[in-house]
Image (tube, rainbow, N blue to C red; front, top):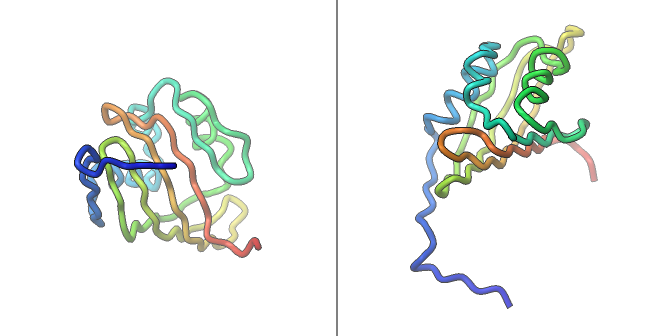
Amino acid sequence: MLMFQLDQTPAIQCAIDHPWIERLFRNIDGCDWSSLNVMLADDVVYERPGYAPLVGRDSVMNFYEEVRIIKSGQHTVHDVLANENKLSYYGHFAGTSKAGESLDVGFCDVCDVQDNLLKHRKTFFYVPAV
């Protein structure tokens, strides 16, 4: 049986504006890799469909600087759910791939942030699958 003690559960906040998430996507969309780098914990893990888990700051930064298929674009976050160090948000990405293709997809991320550093991020894309 699963039980929760609501009086000990931190309040959940739901807001569209969240400074840490705004900073994350400003750095990603602006290709500001040095600013993104300082937002990552040394042992960060990033899980993204189509890729093996990216483990460690160097692996995540290599993904953004070398592997990622996106040339340019913009994330728009529609809603955020935050509880202590846990963040969940969804939104939309529109941009262009390095091959010149248009990209247009909904996404959702679930993150663990500790001391303002990203420890774990798991991305889901809103695409036909099942």
